[in-house]
Structures are given as structure tokens and as C-alpha cells.
Length: 488
Image (cartoon, rainbow, N blue to C red):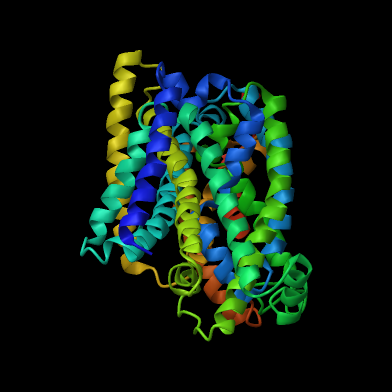
């Protein structure tokens, strides 16, 4: 496929996003940027959150995961559903009752200054790494499909990628992203469905034939109950890990909650959460089916599987001998998936720094806007640096890396919120940053010792829960009975 055609499609796509930004941010102020004036329709938020949740990581890594894990990922998706119920019934009522702009303000009211800054700081670390991983994917594919042939360095590709995101998010923020994410979710879902149809047609399979061949291929196994100790894919590990990953990476994440807090009221936010979570089940099944079809197609044409399974979809889309339509579909879908997540990440990071770290939420409009623009630009530069670092260090599946990192960085946030919600005890506020650093370190040590002294037990994504429990326990040790004036 012509690199010039790919670049043309990318530029047209972003022109549409910039147009939407212009239409939605004409009278945007700080309240629009942070919470969309709490006027977002819940169904628009729900549809857009599908793309923001799946992201380019899912678009690339979930299909590639099928070779080693079959459909085991659906065990985690089932855990997600439990996590979304907790968010809708416990966390959203809290956030709306306190009328929060940043969810970490709760920690300030419940515990104090250092707890607040610790929660916000760990979010900034977590979301910066996550957004970098997602942008790394799309930048790598653009480099491979377009810019390598023109001799353009990778850092220029990153500069272009982040520059385009900055262009359509810096004014309207969440008020714009609610609508751009809707468009991007549509293109992402259209792309994956078209990819399934095109590859199925090439293999001579109808809908029933696809289900049959996936079942017969050995790639369609969902449930794993065999080896609890040594198998990372065991149902309990994936289900529990999925539930707590959702609570931490959605319910305790400013990025995802900022969209929910832009709904008109709590009832709308809860409807958004329930319908969005149900939609994720068939969507993830389609992605996994695509992964199985890609593996079958590579065998059909005699193509060796790549060393990194994250390269499977890009390789077949661009070099697999199919029509140029699949390559075009892949590029559009990847951009839509990656940017629907990255744009909201940039906005939420700007919100957290402006509100949580600089305390400028109540500043005069003109001053707050100037600071917000500066923060937005600075975070864009930080993301560029992180992507370069991620590229230099990464040698694993991106989705695996992302969830592993999340277990270490979201664990202290999970422990802090759990302690605040489940107890009435007062913590020694100045100790909290040290606890938040110590807990991930102890979790890593436990992972190492478990393999050696617990019969070869292998941690999966439940290390997030262990991390949260350690944080909770240490907070209990350094706490005292309440005086009766704490927030419940």
C-alpha cells in the first residue's frame, strides 16, 4: 500500500477530528475542559468509552494474545463486569455526592494533603506510562507503514502523532473528547468487523464456519481450571485480576472517571457504566475471533508467525497478500483505537496536574486557561520522552506489559480508596507516600519468593490485589481510631 495514500488518509481523518474540536470548543472554558459542564449525554459517553477502554493496545495485542492464551482473556472480561458493578454502585455515588472534578480530591478530604498528592501522583505515573504504551503502538505502525520508506526518524513520527492530538484537545478538553471518541469508536469497531469479514471470506468461511474452525483449531478455549499454582491463565487469577484491574484502572482513574463525571447526573452516569460494560463482552469476543482468524490465515498462506505477536495483525494487514482495503481498514482502525484512548489521557493528565498538583481549579478563568495550555504542552513533551524510553525497553506483548505495570502503580491507589471507604480510621498522613512506595516493592519481592517457596506459584494479574492489600494493611498499622469528623 502506498505510504502517500496512508498519510493522506491519516491527515483527512485528523482534519475531521479538528473540525469536531472547532465545533465543540467555540465557547469552551475551564469547566468545559474538565467536566464538559456536566452536560454530556450518557449514551454518547458510553459508546465513546468503548474505544477509550479498548485502545490501540487491544486492537493490536488482544488478537496477538490468542496464539499463547487462546480465548482466556474472556475470563478477565468476566471479571471486568464485576468491577464495573462496584464502580457504578459504590464509587460513582461517592464522586457525585462530593461533586468532584478530580476524584483524588476525595483523598484530601478523607486523609489529608500528602495522601491526596500521593494518589494523584501515582495516577500521573500510571496514566503517563499507559498512554505512552498506547501511543507507542500507533507511532510504531505509522513508522513501519509510512515513514521508514521515506527515511523519517522515529522521533519525528512521535512528534507528528502527539502534535495532532494536542491540536484537537487543547481547547475543548473533555467537552470535545466526548464526541471525538464517539467517532473513533465507530471507526475502530467498523475496522475490526471488516477485518473479520475480509479474512473469513479469504478463508472461505461463513459465520458458522468461523465458529467451527476456531473451535477445531484449538485457539478457542476460554476457561482454564487445571493448574492454579503454575498457570497464569487460571480462571480465578484472571477473573479476580480483571475485577480489580477494572476498579483501579477505571473507577480510580481520573481519565475514565472524568468522562463519567461529565454526565448530567448520577443516574445517567450509572446507565452509561452498565450499558458500556455489557457492550464490551461481544466486542472483545470479536477481537479474539480476529486473532484466531489471523493465525489461521498465516498458516493458510505459509507465513511464519512473528517473534512478537503484537506484529501479527500489522504484518498480515500490510504484507499478507490481501487487498489494499484491509491495510487501509487496519490503519484507520488502529488510529481510531489508539487516539480515542490517548486524547482523553492527555486531557485527564492536564486536569490532574492543574487541579491536583497546582491547585488552579478555582483560579480566574484567564489565568487558569493560560496555565492549562502550558501544562497540556508540557505533558505532551513528557509523553514523547516516555514513548522513546518505552521503545528502547519493551520486548514483551504491550497489553501484558501494560497490565503488569498497572498492578504496581494502581495498587497504592486501590489501597488508599479501599481504606477510606471501608474504615473510619485516621491515617498518619505524612507516612502515606512512603507506604505507597513500599507496597509495590514488597509486592515484587512476594512475586519472586512465591515462585521459590510456594510450590512454584506464578502470579498473574492478581498482583494488583496483593499490592492493594499491602497498602491497606500498612495504612491500618499507621492509623488510629476516628475522632468522628472524617468523611465516610
